Length: 411
Image (tube, rainbow, N blue to C red; front, side, top):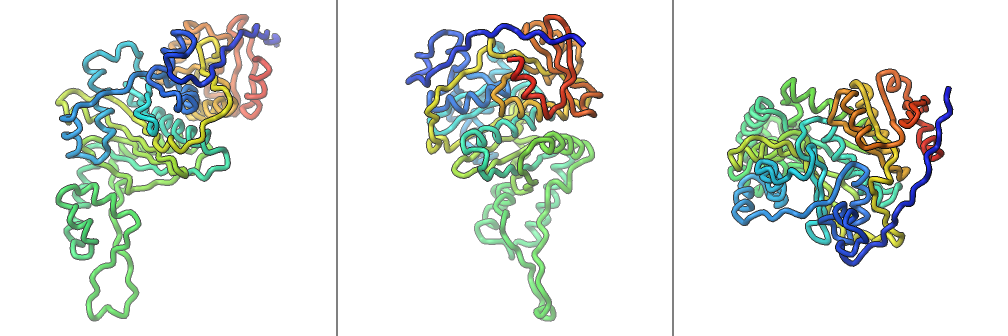
C-alpha cells in the first residue's frame, strides 16, 4: 500500500470579531459573512460546517405578514416566503441550489434556510445544525431535548383533520374554555394548546365510582399515509444515527396550509430553536409553484455569552476534505461523519444532493481538495471510511472511530 503524502500547510487567516462586518479584512471574507451581525459570528462559524453562508436578511411587506397571520402566529413565516419569492423571481441565482443561507434578524435572532431540495437528509441536517448551535453555546453537558413532529401529505392531513374535528365536537363541553373558544378560529392552534392538558370524559351517575381515564387525543402520526410514514421514518433514521436526545411530540403539528413535512423544536435552557418545512407556502399564498425550503430559527442569542477567543471563519483554502457517499447505507452515515468533523473543528465539503458517485467526484475535482473521504456500501457495513489522496490516488481504509485522529495527522 502506498504511503499517503502529506500536503504542505497553508497559512490560515484568523479573524478577531469586528465591530461591523465591513471591517472584515478582505472582500472574500466579507462575502462569506454577509448579513451576519458581529454578535452572531460564533453561531455562523458552527453553521459553516453544514455548508451555510451569509446573505442579506429579507424584507417582508406588511401585507405578506398580515396574510400569513391567517395561517400561523409564527411571524418568521414572512421571511421564509421572501426566500421562496427570490427563487421564483430568479433573484437567488447567485446561490447554487440547494442553497444553505442564513442571516441575522436582530441581535437576538439568527435565521437560516436550506432551499431547493426535498431530500429527507436535509430535514435531518437542519435538526443537526440547530442542535449543534445549542451544543456549542451551552456546552457538551447541557441538557438539550429535540422534539419532532410531521405534517404528512394531503391524504394524511385529511384523515387527521377529520378525526380532530370529530374530537373537538365530541368533547366540546370538557375542553378548557380558552381552547374551546379557539377551535372555530384555528383548529390546529387549539390542538397545539392541548399539550399537557388532561381531558376527563363526562361521567354518568352510574359510573361515578369507576376510575376515570383521560380522553385519548388524536395523534397526527397515527394518520400518516404509507408514503408519508416512509418519509418520516427515513428522517428519523438519519436523526437516530446522531448522538442526540429526541422524542416525537405530536403537539408541534402546525397548519398544513403553510407547513409540509418535518417540524422540530429544540429545548435548550434560554435558547429557543425551532424549524420546519414549508414547500407548499408559495403555492398557497402566492398561487405559484412549490419551492422546497426547510427553515431554522435560533433565538435567545442576546443571553448567550460571547466567546473571548478569536473567531476563525472557514475559507475555501481551509477545507482539505470532500465527503462522498454511495448507496442508502452510506447516506445514513453522512450526518454522523459531518458531526464528528464539526466537533473536531475540521471543515469539509460535501454534495449530498447528488446521488451519483460520478457527479460527487466531479464536484470534488472542481474544488481541487487534496483528500476524498469515501463511504460506499462496504465501508458503511464495516463502519469505516476510505481516505483517498487526490494527488497520487493512494488510499487507505480507516475505521470511523479512528477517523478524526487520522485526519489530524494529515493536517
